Amino acid sequence: MKKFLLIALLLLLAVSVVACGPSAAMAAVLKSDVARDTSPQVSATDLQTLLNGNSEFAFSLYRVLKENNTGNMFYSPYSISLMMAMAYAGARGETEQQMAGAMEFNLSQEELHAAFNYLALQLALRTSDEANFQLDIVNDVWGQKDYPFLDDYLDVLAENYGAGLRLLDFINDPEGARQTINDYIYEQTNQLIKDLIPEGSINILTRLVLTNAIYFKADWKYQFNKDATHDGIFYLLDGSQVTTAMMTQREDFKVAFGDGWKIIELPYEGDNIAMDIIVPQDFSAFESAMDFAALNDIVNQLQMGDVSLTMPKFKFSSDFNLKEALSALGMPIAFDEFDADFSGIATVEQLHIQDVIHKAVVAVDEEGTEAAAAGAVIIGTLSMPQMFTVDSPFIFLIRDLATGSILFMGRVMNPAA
Image 1 (tube, rainbow, N blue to C red):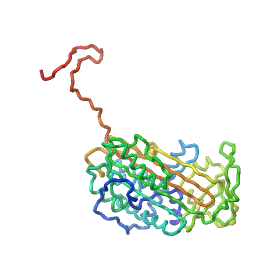
Image 2: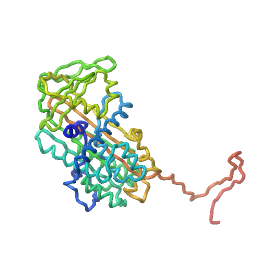
Image 3: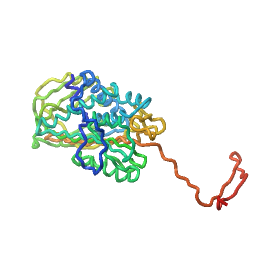
């Protein structure tokens, strides 16, 4: 079961933080003196709690996102969990409680970050196992230069995520900072994720941006013969059909056939990670009822069998603004500029989450799968008041507001006269 939970997590393109990536952005780094804990003491129970919580969140988020997305959809729930965990490290009071509930963070702060660290270190081992398998995971934290971030917060990032703050100047050059982050993400995702953060998302009120980038490329354990690929029919939910490229092969795969569904598991090289494909008979009803417990039940029925497989090649991208979705899951206070409490990050200003952005790309063909995902949690301060300076001659009135009667009226040409 534990092995499945890890595989299921990765099948959802779970993104985890390993360390700060290569120095693509020319930015100074502010980092705690605390070293990365490369041997975190995490119990099997705590790890299981983390995995279960992240998977429960994955399905909760799926149910919210599908309501506003009628077409293809692809995302990395663990990337979102991780970014929110780093923000959660600085949350306090009701903000912390709401985030824990919405994100299914069912461990204490200390236990949660240690468990994320442990899982990240395990995922980092995957790339070294196989020549035809690549899993590059990068986490970075971008902070306003000269901003008084709390030492305790920097310690959590350093010890559990191996991350320091790359210093940028959001206040004086928000657009330049945005471009720096986007260029960096583009590089880390093998040029698959372009312009992650849209124009205007970073402004002079931004103080902190948490980013993740993942690049995944793996060959199938059993590749399809390109010569056997042919045009075939794919049936849409509305009863219509389209013609698309269909791949075919005959091989021993794990499969199961249940009441109104069928599932096949396609392993990648190394047998550590696989893609599970579930085909429901009544898609809408199945999708509405699907949750983590149901997935566990289905996957536990997989058995090896002789299979003649036909499936489509596909390639598409998805992008999401998650502010409304996460609010709907029960954490609206984190986005409230007056009530949010991120006093664990800094205390000189009232901080809140300005936005949560996510983008993902996937391509599946005869050889295997290439995918990338990236996201950003943008944290800023209160909206600044409009500047209104009276420093030149002016007219003034004293009015009765109910009637509009002008009781007094005048002008000031020289207030010192």
